[in-house]
Amino acid sequence: MKYRFSSRTAFTALCVGTALFVATPAAAQDYEVWVVDQSNSTGKTFGGAIHIYDGPAMNGNPAADLPPIAKIDLAGDTATLCMTNTGTNPVRPHMLFFNSTGKFAVLSFVASGHVVIFNAVSRQAVACLRTAAGAGGARQAHAAVPSPDDTFIIVANQNGKLLERIESDYAAGVFTLNPAATLNLATCVTPNGVACELAGVRPDNAPICPLVDSTSSLGFVTLRGGGLLVVNPRATPMAIVAEYDAQTVHGNGCGGVEAGGSMYLDSGGATAANLAEFDVYRFPLTGYDAANPVNSPMPLTVFSDDVGERDAHGVSATKAGRYVWVADRHAGVVEVFNTLTNDREPTLDLKSASAPDPSPDLMDLAPAGNRMFISLRGPTPLTGDPHVSTGTTPGVMVMRIEEGGRRGDVIGIVRISNIDAGGVERADPHGIRVRRR
Image: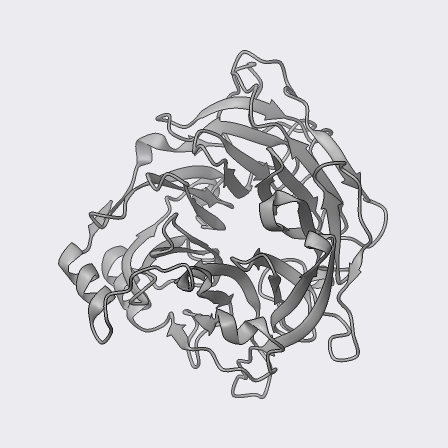
């Protein structure tokens, strides 16, 4: 599948109604906060919304009813494009990422398997592709992660148990799903001759989040049932260069960030077979080779709490990668880890009288490094086990960074609401990213 949009149209969208933007030092910190609401558009069984907030307006003590500067109704032009290109509507927007320039956004739809690329300046969808049918005919797009070098997008087709690749050329506006690059995680065999999916080793190979390192040469693929695969994302088909079993890396990890010269990944709960889990691992960025034995190079387990009511999820790093923050949806806290010492710093408790169960999900850092923005789940969660992902205050939590990231204080919660005809709050924020303008 290949989709193209006109570069002339893209340039026009950048310029119409405003002077051509020229970056200056003062403008370098100008940014937006994009938040994905998974709930269906009004009166629809598909769609959803992206709420876009002005960064400077979020930087102070933002009012709970701060309006977005723009809202993309995904049941509108986006759904029309997806219906035209794939014959189906996009359902349940989930994870959002920007390409290296911030000029394009990549949005995955976890229920329908769509991946939509937006011109982030014009807010227009420019391409819509759909993942292939995999295991049992299932297809999903849990996460679609653009490479830092802007040449590809790695897609976790969760229930299809496929790792797929979209070739991306943002300048030309060409995005192509490449079936030859697909790695079938249900049927593949590792270089060690071990079945990729195997009871007692990697029992459920639904890919959750593929994280690409800063060189775009390594993809770390977390798995629902535990274990992990590191792949060469540029190879065709994508090639396994390291394998880890479920005893070494526990299941259902979704958060990750490159910081302190390592890749930090977590393992979480929120599945019926494993409701509670909080592990943080530190993987090296070198030493990967298909000739290595299993579990090599070995990651460092920075922290593990698999007994209490825990659910590690969103991960971000503070400025210069000094600290790594990991959100716990169930406990309503953020755990902070020192990347120089691997020490666990004091826990940040996000609960308050106005947000007794905030259910912090994903997070991203302001360009200046002085604020962290965290998506908060709603009372009717559409993804994740309700046991851990139900929240009281759907919206965006704004935290002031203190002590270089060792501490943080909540300075406001911007509410997001989507009340249905029966008076039920359906808003369910999930994906969140900061975009420099």
